[in-house]
Image (cartoon, rainbow, N blue to C red):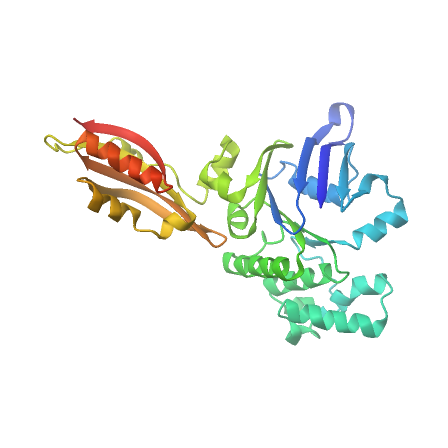
Length: 345
């Protein structure tokens, strides 16, 4: 749906030159929710604004649904933008218009017949859960309701792509979850390609299929959200993930003095699980099958969209040979095992 190749954006010139994007290449598939995450100033908002040519790239190409957006004339670009909806952090609603009239606005610009446009607006307000707010003004709405109006307005011209520029960053966590839930419903119902720009890894975790991590104007990692959460490949990715899922083992556990287990050995391991394995009693089965004790020291569990994932830190106690057999059993069950420390015999 969207192909970005060697995209570079430079602001200013000479001593005032600022590199906003450097040789960015991305492929965004039709019908997916694709996240782009980065810190403030990393270039993520510039990137999304280049997709619909609100910012003109310095070099590189952007293809949207087979069209080279950089080669379009003014009329062609206006027509394309009708098929690329955009929602904003601060809603950008017209204060002098009612909710109904705000959603109607892009249909007026597109010269859609009034009766047809009114039917479309009513359908969109029902979709976003604001039928009862049609005749109120933006100042009478909560932040979440304003963003729902923004989403309905962005959908007015039946776009193929929806761009979200930090659309939840001004909202509280509960409202953010409701807006992300709405976007996921829209994605499922309409098959819409959604590109989410954010600095919050919770947004990526809750809503996205794939993610690109941008750092210092450059894409440093791209992949399925599931894979990046379970095995982040760059320090930037690990930093974002650690902000919501603490994979670091407390120092007191790593440095703890193991008690004397006599002839037995003690091994400290981290077990990472994701998907179906999170719902299976694998640790319990291991304890029953092998002559080892499992002391749970630390752990957490969360969800990626509807997929559970997490990790446990365990101390396994038993004969060395039996511990090794138990570890092989865990690996065969699809768990990722990391040996953190050895103690005892």
